Image (cartoon, rainbow, N blue to C red; front, side):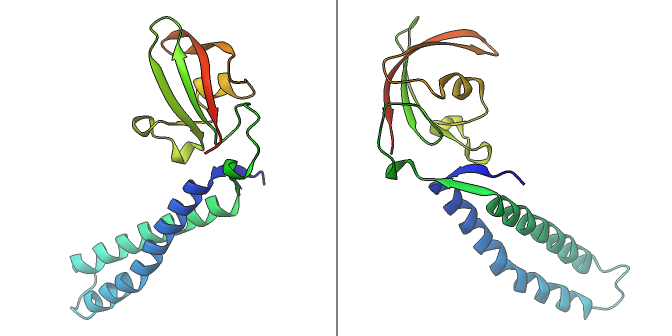
Length: 157
């Protein structure tokens, strides 16, 4: 079983979500018990809804527990900033053609959210940046065509 990289923030979010789900378990069990007391289980909509909710909750718990079990948590704040782009670093890029500045943190697939400036380590941009240094110029093949960026800054935050 291969380890999957994850940021400290990503691990915390998963653990928080797991806590919420574990606290819902007894409430769902109680709802099933109350619905069971209402009578005929074949025609008992409350019972079937509670059982379905239980199945979804248990599946989510298993999924999160698995992700945590294969996670390799990387805390870049405890590393020496060499200027090299690695998983977890925050990168400021300048589009050479438009002079637009963008800032991305390279994170795991589950943590990616482009609106918040977090891109997946498996995205074309992140794959093109990994291993590069501050000051480098890179050409990255994206679905929208080739983009040319200058790496302005690499932060280990």
